[in-house]
Image (cartoon, rainbow, N blue to C red; front, side, top):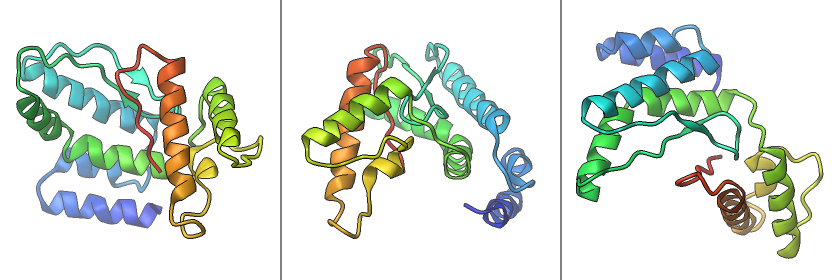
Length: 173
């Protein structure tokens, strides 16, 4: 996303009456403070709905985004999913997308090495300077996304192996 696209998105949210989100986007950039504010707003929303929300963990696939291990308690999975979505949309979803797409993703070093070894076992040569998911994914047009799927699997599996405290891992491009 370019600065102009982010500003344009801010204008749309302002027109829709979402001043808070428009305010975060109007300068054309989303930084760590903006992301932290949106992430805390999501956590607060979930707490208001009665969920125990622990402190977020940093996603090792990009060292940028947050992962929450929220216990849904006795709620049905569909109800939890609706609550989760209602708290994420649009604020956290939009801010996170802009933050990830405009920031510098950097995979945790132990994860990078393990994912690189996994990809080598699948006959993919990942350069030592590959530091983000896109660098592991290759050109999706070259092989119809086969390498991209292999990268997502290697990164996800290795992240969960190396960081067993994580409830899930987000592998986003």
